[in-house]
Structure formats: C-alpha cells, structure tokens
Image 1 (cartoon, helix red, strand yellow):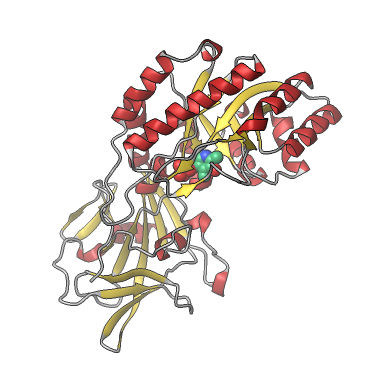
Image 2: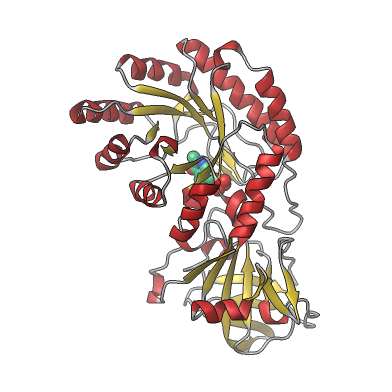
Amino acid sequence: MKPMGPIPPFFTSEEGMLLIGGSGAASLVDEAGDTPLFVYDMAIVEGQARAFRDAMPPTLPLHYAVKANPYAPLLQRMAKLVDGFDVASGGELTRALEAGMDPAHISFAGPGKRDDELIAAIDSGTTINLESEGEARRAIALGEQRGRTPKLAIRVNPDFDLKGSGMRMGGGAKPFGVDAERAADLARRVIDAGADWRGWHIFAGSQALGVEALIETQAATIDLATRLSDAVGVTPPLVNLGGGFGIPYFPGDERLDIRPIGEALDMLLEQRADILQGSEFAMELGRWLVGEAGVYLTRIVDIKKSQGETFIVVDGGLHHQLAASGNFGTVVRRNYPIAVANRFGQAPAQEAATVVGCLCTPIDRLGDKVALPPVEEGDLIAIFLAGAYGASASPAAFLGHPAPLELLIG
Ligand SMILES: *Cc1c(COP(=O)(O)O)cnc(C)c1O
C-alpha cells in the first residue's frame, strides 16, 4: 500500500457518489456524454480568487497564467474574474483575446517568441515580457516596421530562487529572462529606443507550499526590482512579482495559508523604496487558482491480476493526465489523490490495487498500489487536482485514443 495525496476539501458525496459542484459524478458523465472527462468547477476557482483578494493587499491585481488551463469556457469566466492574463505563446494570446481579455491587461512571456508572435503582441497592444537582448532587438525593429510603439517589460532571471519550489524557474543559468546583472542595461536601451516601458517581470518559481519561502522570495523580488529600477533611474509602471503558490498534490502536503503572505507583502509594499512609489504590483498564478477545481473521471474497463497484484485498467491515461502518472516535471513518482467516484467513502479492499491507463507503456500508471474499495468493471475512477496542467499538458495524440471531454460547471 502506498499513500496518496489529500483529496481537496471541496468534495463530498451523496449515497456513495462523489459530488462535484453539487452534481453526482455519474450524472456529469451522462451530461458530457462519455468518459474520459475533465470536470472543472468554477465555484472552486471563484473561491480561490476570493481568498486571494481577502488575503492580499487590496490594490494587488491578480493575473492568471493561461498555460495552467486554457479551456475556452474557463478562460471566458477567468477574463471576468481576474485582472489580467499572462500568456506564453501566440496561440494562448489568441485564446486570451477571444476570451475577451483586454490586451492592455495581457502580458506575453516565454522563450523563443517568433516574429509573427511578437507582431501579434505589438499589433494588439499586449505587453511583451522580453526574454533576451535578441528578443528586445527584434521587438523594437518590428514595432518600427509596423509604425507602432511596442509595450515592453523585461523578464528578469533573478539571482535567487524560490526555496522548496516544485519547478525552479530562476536562479543560475536559465533559458528564461535576462540575467539580473544585465537587466538594467537592457531596460535603458529599450527606453532609449522609444518603446513603451512597462517594467519588470520576476518569476522565481512554482508550486511552493512554504509560507516562509514565499515571503522571503517576495522580499527578494521587491529588493531586486528596487536595485534594477534605481540603476535605470526610472519608476517601472508595473512590477510583476511572479507567483509560485502551490497546491497539495502528495502525501504530507498541506494547503497553503496565504494570509501571512498577504500581511508580509502589505508591509513590504508599505516600506518600498522611493523609486517604486508610483509602481503597480501584480501576481500571476496558475495552478493555485484552477488546479483543485478539476477532476478527471475515467471508467474501469478491466480488472486483472498479475503475480498476485491487482491492476485496475481504465479508459483514460497519461495521454490526458500526464502529471498524475508522474511524468510531468517530478523526480519521484507519487500518487495523486484518487478515488472510486461511485463508491466514494467506502472502506478500502484488503489489498492495494494499481490503477493503470489504456496506453501500452509501463509509465501509464495513475495510482500505484493505492487503497481503493473493491471495484467492478464500469465503475468510475476520479483523479483529483486535474484542473491545471491536465488536458492541455498531456500528449493527447500518443496511441491514437480520442481526446478527453471537458466540462465546466458552477
Ligand atoms: C508557468 C508560469 C506561471 C504559472 O505557474 P503556476 O505554478 O501554475 O502558478 C506563472 N508565470 C510564468 C512566467 C510561468 O511560466
């Protein structure tokens, strides 16, 4: 028996059926028409946004990192819920604009932006978070060609990283951002070239559950923004502080209490240096907003034994929910929270079972030796924490199975 992560506190059951947003899992599958199915409960997302607003300084805008979940119906709701979008490709920019987000509140980060992507940003009035000197040169030249003033910020590769971060994005040699030592020089060149200078984007890491580490990182981020802005001698209109709020995926993880982070940030902003007095500050979050709101529902096709072990074979797999198989940026495979949706709360069987997907590869393992109630063919397996980096972050074409269905409720 191996442990699994905690089921998010939003989910209950009625007569043994998992409820998602008040509806039974089986009836949601009927409504969508089939399995495998991702269900996203917007009420949970709205609750997270509310918690952010309650805890954080009142003037702090909340941006959504679209790559966490770009499902169009969700994006349309997000466009009304948050203050801005951060996109990481031309495709995401198109989706953000289609969802109705004002380009004045979209920023575009990410390495390897092609000229056509830079043009789409410049023409729409989206802020480009520059990842390199070369990208700055191209964006300025393309702005001149098109007779438009590009809105340019610099993504800084910070000289520190977010401790305990599940995915480090700063500190050391990185493909992301301009090294802190060179960022002020580049900013001066961008301003001298006549671009619309938008400020700094400093993203130090992702998926952190340590309050102290997050507070330290925000302090270091504001300190870095101060040093850089002093060196340039210009107040940045916006300092994007990054994000990094994590969610509990694995055994022993606990939900993050963001209130002390908000209190600390309040103090930091109160005491900020003169050069940042006129700056706006923002945070960008992906998984913390949407991750817990998603459940992946997949049906049991087969139950078999091999050498005394039980294998539960489902009609979904890593082609839809790669992260739950442990193959999306984790070093050691651990179990996501998983349950039998139509036997929710039933006592576990004597023996552990391994839940595998329908792909002919040994890495398609959705639950390794987990404690589940005795099951039958046709039962529904629920894998939680499927709201972020699920459907869009999985190799859907691998093995030619159909794409998953998605359903937004609430
Ligand atoms: C991926 C990413 C995010 C979102 O990270 P989460 O862990 O989903 O909150 C935010 N900003 C940038 C620049 C990113 O690349």
